[in-house]
Length: 171
Image 1 (tube, rainbow, N blue to C red):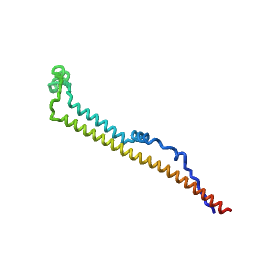
Image 2 (tube, one colour):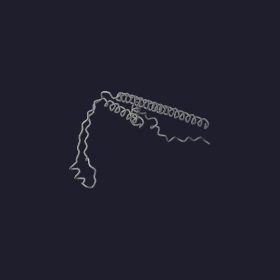
Image 3 (cartoon, rainbow, N blue to C red):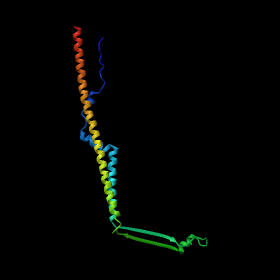
Image 4 (cartoon, helix red, strand yellow):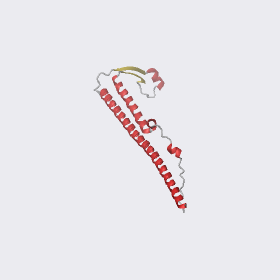
């Protein structure tokens, strides 16, 4: 009996096609992976929190208005009559200039800055972890291509050796 090899049905062109550019692949991963996008949004939110905390240093102007009656409804007068006779109206304008507020604003700003730094570190760490993963997978793909080429060459050599051995025994 003779040895029969089954040809592989692997698409060699697909396996040996060049891999995408490593930098481009890393950039796409950073844009598409939700964890990195989330860290980026957390950083933007921390920056907005810093701006909000710094707003505590700015003066604020408040407008308030109210309307009401000073009577109770006892059934003698209708509600409309009370509104016409005893209507109280007030409007107020308040200006708050933060001179000293027990260092609350300063503390809030420092806390917001620390939160922003923490968000930056988290984003940076997540990006580094992703890039390490992508680099590892990229290197694995390169190694797999090399192993495929070596295995294919070994298989071709084994087939050639088998053919030579069969020819020797046929003679």
